[in-house]
Image (cartoon, rainbow, N blue to C red):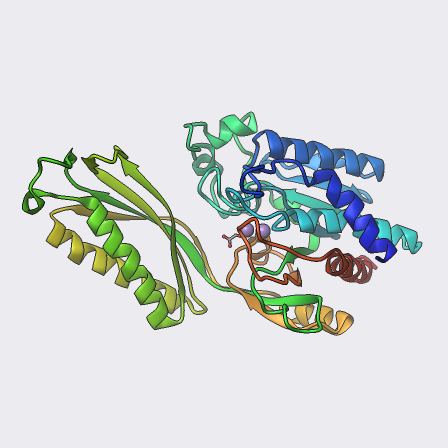
Amino acid sequence: MSDLAARFRKLWDEIAPIGRDAGSGGYLRYSLTEPELRLRDWFRDQAEQRGMPVTEDGNGNLFAWWGDPEAGDAVLTGSHFDSVPHGGAYDGPLGVVSALLAVDELRDAGVTPVRPLAVGAFVEEEGARFGVPCLGSRLLTGALPAERAAVLRDADGVSFAEALGGAPAGARPELLGRFRSFVELHVEQGRALADTPDAVAVASAIWPHGRWRFDFAGEGNHAGTTRMADRRDPMLTYAFTVLAANKEARLRGAHATVGRVSVEPNATNAIPSRVTGWLDARAAEPDTLTGLVEAVHDKAIERARRDGTGVTLTEESATPLVAFDGGLADRLAALLDAPVLPTGAGHDAGVLAGHLPTAMLFVRNPTGVSHSPAESATDVDCAAGVAALARVLGELTC
Ligand code: GLV
Ligand code: MN
Ligand code: MN
């Protein structure tokens, strides 16, 4: 194992147990809960060890600075610590750990950046606790008003403002204006690199995507005594809608997933009174995405009529097509001799890309699995990611 791979492993092992569920082997690192707060403390400690002061933006995002935080013209890197329920180890933390190690690499090489370098840890990237993905970067950029974020609630009814310990600050244009560029390193979330000689790629674009909540209302009743013909069962409308989403996505070469459902009263011997399903839909083109969601909605309405149920659709978040800065992507691809790939996954980089030149580096994932305990990357590839990030940051901060 190379020196850098060994250093990666050593730092990685410090956080590996935090928030790990012994049963699934996956991570429960919901933002601003105990495991994620421990990771944030670990981040502060690592920054302190490197003599990097940490600032917080009033929205839950942390920044560790190499150079003067007030100077402006800074290069930002980093990612997030939070996970989806029972998620993998790499999605998020890899970008933060790699950024800290890239600072070490640059220092070991005797580099003194002309511009400040900031390592960021964004809050609630997955939206697994409060429902809106990239909540921290949306707040920082003003894409989501602070008043809306403040009242988002988790499954226990705790609001984002309560979890944060106060109302979020919202848009911070003067802070955003201090960054000249952002580079987020992330584990690849498909098999695009798995069978290639390349350990690292550069991102070209993020598919437009969003989350839609379908509420199906029916009549709660007895499972044993209610005649089949008399039922108004929202589970049927829900089930049909899930199948329709899959079919409509396949027809369009798009992606549709219903990965979360809630049922009332959730009893084996009761016909549900209400079912809520969350649709995650993504497509390469915005019109395809709009057409997909409309088609699924139409199918749900048609089925609800047959089932005697009601259906309402609510958009919970929407992220437009992100085309990363072409000049920057080409520059990094040439510097690293790396391929350029689009992705269907969302990232804080996608939000920041609307405000400053932004790029992403992807590290090879041998299984291509993500948002699952099976997500993986080898130490050797992670070290290649750190080395690539250090080269990029060295170039951008000069
Ligand atoms: C975030 O990882 C997403 O794409 O949902
Ligand atoms: Mn993710
Ligand atoms: Mn991520």
